Length: 348
Image (cartoon, rainbow, N blue to C red; front, side, top):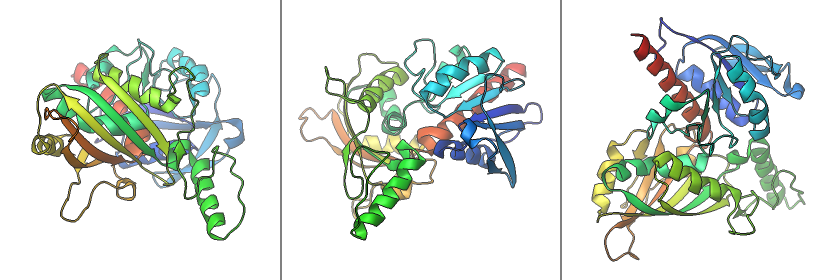
């Protein structure tokens, strides 16, 4: 987005020292978001730390209820408890909040937005806009182009989630655990509940004793329905943590209302915003986390018929996307760009 001489914003980044916070700063800089002021906030233990931005360093300040005076836009990425406490204060001070936590996602009056899918939902916001779960974004953004022309009735989703989804501390733990394993040393994990090096396990969110689904799986299912605006969408999800530093991968099999071919799906995805087709059968080259890391686009491939459905209505595919970018920071900044563009249109 190019800077506009007619409108620039005072922006606060809450949780600026975290893994997503760092990417928020990078996105604001790289996309040349029009800033008249940028304030960085974090907990008291991070206050005073200096963060690089646009060739200079900015000091991190301690977050308080009074931090939002004069702020137009607050980008939150500091966890649900912080969002629930401080987002209302930001709104009361006149800011619009784009929140990356799960605190408000399923609130009926809070828009849950992926700009490539439902930007119109931004028109209904009352001060808070929710950024969806990273796995939900990566799973369903490539599917929207299909859903628009041939309604998807059912999805079976399996995620392969990187350490980045659990924050910088989990990424460090994966590195240290792997080094210890290779050197034959004992290692006691502190961030995640199970040994991480050369291992994978059910996502480290709590299990609902009634349904057997963990919290991440429930988020993916509920949020997909809300973003698509389709409460009847049938979804099952299995979310797994894998020993990858950055970028989540997702396997999806989906059933449409009418028959659909892999060729039709490839054509739709190739033209869809925010995704890139990586589907080279001859070289067995398909989306991989290492290729998706640092990329804005979600990579999509392995597009093939679901042979378990004789009706020809089902397709299987595989995608990979950077959890810290499109799964979090980039999506939040794109929401902010949409808000500013709408404001400028209304003023013209």
